[in-house]
Length: 173
Image: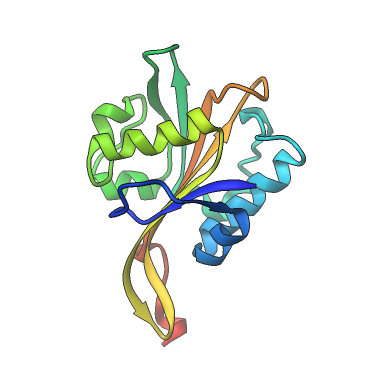
């Protein structure tokens, strides 16, 4: 499966495979990707209604659900925002558009990432390497996964965000 993998400073999108994504991903990102991949089966992407939040319970603090509304002039609307998304922003963006409440390098950068997922119908994983603890990467990462009601047009994006504060790294010392 083709995916988009990139570090934020990259100006071009790096297309790769799901195996490469899993190699670079942190624990939660890998688990959420594996869940999405299992639910989609042989299809390009699953529907929003197939996502079982009980199965995603360990990762709910980092989960966001973005509705893709409109046609050509699409709007991206935060419909579900986990506590990590609220903490990183300092407020709850539920009901707001991504263009007004985006968290990232810039609004334009965030919107381009969503465009890749929506237009190409592929997952995107981007990350920052903050530090290394005992040989493990401790950073932040964002996984964007397309969802579709009809199997063709992306009308939701499942997002998982992870940051160093999401973990108690004492066990690794």
